[in-house]
Length: 538
Image 1 (tube, helix red, strand yellow):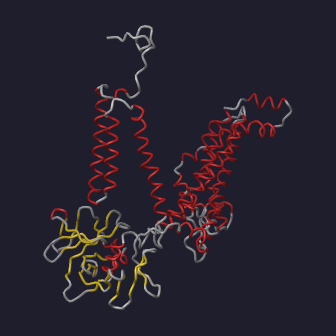
Image 2 (cartoon, rainbow, N blue to C red):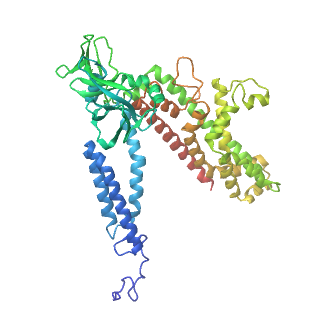
């Protein structure tokens, strides 16, 4: 029945009926296709929630389970309602923004105030178990196991796991947290008693075991009660008693072999003796702002940090200047009326943009080789381009300019075509020369469109990890300082701190990452504020 009240949508003489809301097919009375899409989305959300909940339950992470339950309930509440159509569009983007932008930033900030890194990865209880297990020595009644060394994930860097077969035939997986019995169907045992396959683990080959020999020799599986399992070769392990035992009353560890007593330092997360010697295994603690103050006040650190920061700013600014000048100059040349072969020239000019950048960096690295590189041979030079700090920086800027100018060339070409030629012609009629017309008419109009792109180019090159790592790996390095090279950017320096061969320092690397974020955000904010004045050109 049609509505008959005046002023009611659809009523005679009233306002016209509003158009259907977007997404109306997803509400309760929508089309069958919309209903199927809604059922599929909700089913996928429920499946993901169950997939995430079981590991969280196994780990006892009740906060995580609460978050998963809350998000799932919110999704069902929004999409089962015939109303709240705008929220149906906003919710997926909001959840993805939280998951991939806000949470990583919060995690980085929270990590930056801890000592998280090699030797400080777990809790105090795990550190005590590891210390006791690492001091295990064989005794007369030690139990022997058949051993296969495995890893979780990457064989070269994944977490080590001992796959063990006890004398009674029971199979175990032993890691830094202890032993876990394997079900008969989860492991394949050879006739020699060694596990050759196990679900969830990668059994290392002889070469991989040899490559991680030192790590395996130091590895021990805690079994409780001051005992642990250590390897005695590549195919056998034994369970022995620890020489270092923890005493809860004094909160210390006593070494029965040397008599040394290591007392817990809960501020640094380590056990130390009276002489200041510390045990290598510690635990994760909150260290406050010490990682940030270390960057600013520690002479051995801030000398490298501020030197790298200066070069980082110079590299990003120099790259922006070079690609802007070269790209704009080529765009002006291509903008000349009557130029023959313009299309062919443009194709050749944007060719570097079509090349894979990582392959080009490797190719240019070889071209700058001091012995057989094309650059030295072509110009008859004898320059160690990548071995000297300044030539390495110049080569890096040159290659980055070569890869980056096509983008600015394309942007400048489009911006030039949007500027009315009548403006330049009017300036020339008024007596302005070519340079004056470009300086006072064309360039200000170009900068209105190009300034935000230049700011984003600066921010990108401030963290251009690929360029530095593929060309120079941060080098050349000064004698005695393998952590900070002449061409290092803050991002490559942070990577070396976090994953370098001298031990990971995730907490300190996170603090440097926060500094990078603040610097880029500050420079971008100032640049964008300054660019607002250009809008007055219009």
